[in-house]
Image (cartoon, rainbow, N blue to C red; front, side):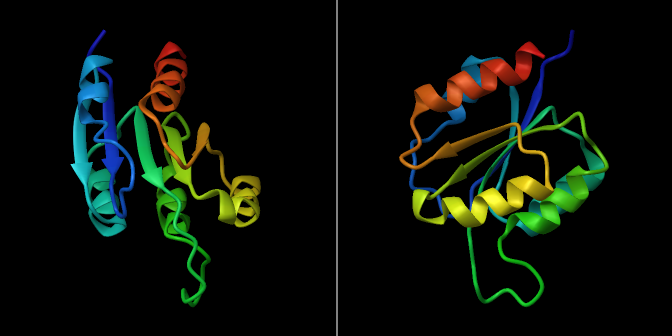
Length: 126
């Protein structure tokens, strides 16, 4: 079996550097720092797992967060497991997104390596 591929989208951060964890778990890792770069990446490559942050923003004209456009792209690839980090104060808004789109694992801040490792082990287990 080939190495699983992970796309990490780091827009705001605020959690530990998870790249060593990703590599320790056997992922081939690609990191981008914007949704635009993630969409471009996904046109060429389909990873096994995407790790992204949920950023609720009221100033978007036609959506409520940074993830809607990404989710539209990922709907074409239902096999991709999406792990999302979110701020607890936006849990109600995030839950509305979860009702519309499949999210494999949701991890509230503070994000720890242990929580991410547990989600990723489930993702690669099948």
